[in-house]
Length: 217
Image (cartoon, rainbow, N blue to C red; front, side, top):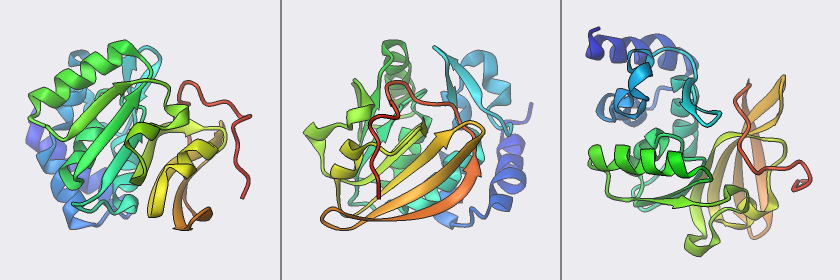
């Protein structure tokens, strides 16, 4: 398998057609080696338009969804970012390449170990991997300039919105199968939020998010 050709094809045939056109995001997809974050058994599928099983019922999201979320968040070099649902650490590595610091929270100890190992191997030093329940965010390090939820939630938790600073953005997939919507929620003033629907999709639900923890706009 020609890894670099497969990476090029992923970017040109899956990601660009999804209107991911930010040159910085596209360049990053060449630099951060997605195959190094896929489980060894699935390494040859790292660039396929599919979710990759990580064990423990969790999956890497499809490349185009990760790329689109990254583009919509518009991460700046001074941003402090929170990711909920670390998985293998790939999204954290992408975020870290753009941000000042990333805190990523994972509820499954096995995945915490894998992500730490993958990030260390990739030479990523500005990510803190935390074991915990991401449904409540990670208030110890907040507030954040950007939050990304790497999985779906039935409703947006109030706790995450409260950890956005003014001007902060939250990228999240909301709903339950078969109807889910990726949203970008921006904190425009203290306690005031603007929601933009980005695209329809279906992605695996994250642990620990109950519908009861909803926030109504």
